[in-house]
Image 1 (cartoon, one colour):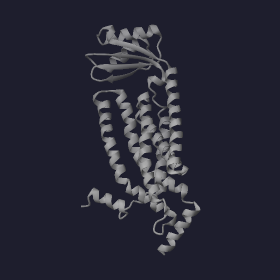
Image 2 (spheres, one colour):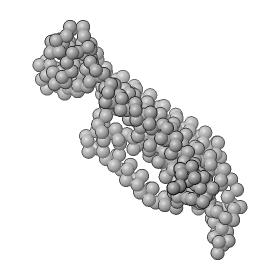
Image 3 (cartoon, one colour):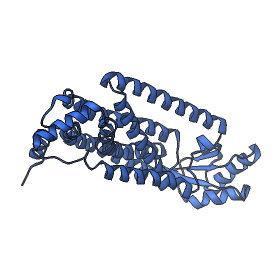
Image 4 (tube, one colour):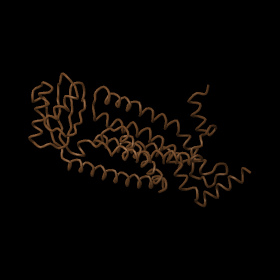
Length: 324
């Protein structure tokens, strides 16, 4: 039986090879389908489930309750404001979070007292707060600004480091793919998009970029003098680089995904901690998608952008002639 170590050695030496670059049309099709589905999901579900931090509203926190019946909270709110939509979430083992649209001051106080009565606790055990939509708009603006600055700096740095704007373009296409798919998953499962989720989105961009840079660094090493090669074409050299970094990419992804999966399970199932759940889902999906894009998209797109250069076409013709 072939060991994983032996497979890694064969991939690095070129004895064994997966044709990632040659089958790039398949990966493009898969990526395009996933992106389209990710765009359609929010439309089908009626939009994103934005947290109260973005849409604004009233929030109530019930602490140290002996009973965690979520129906009681909704019924208590409806005794004060019958038509309002109520979102009730368990937080930990004895706390409940109740969110509604913006209530008037007198309605908010009446709802707080109604919750205390329904759960048979002191009024001080129920805290109320209000978050205006302006705060959410400010968070959104800062997140978008941070994303734009990040992408500009990344593009310039990669173009300078690799001395090729085409590598920057390929990396940005992979980053866009990762971000769209992760947001699409959020829309699909119905998780709230909170500031913690936004932090997760920005974090996965860094991970995806890191994995892509590792692959591209090997690509640069392999293709440094590719126009003088008489044995392998540019596309084959890039494919070799992807195979040489494949085991490392998979190992890094597994090491990153396992603890994040644990945080996601603990945060969503055991503790009911919304912040842990929100950021962990983004990291979990983004890490997997980032590994996929660095292998199946970034390098093939880079080849696609460069394969028609005259010196590379001449080198490929020379390799073909030698093989004949």
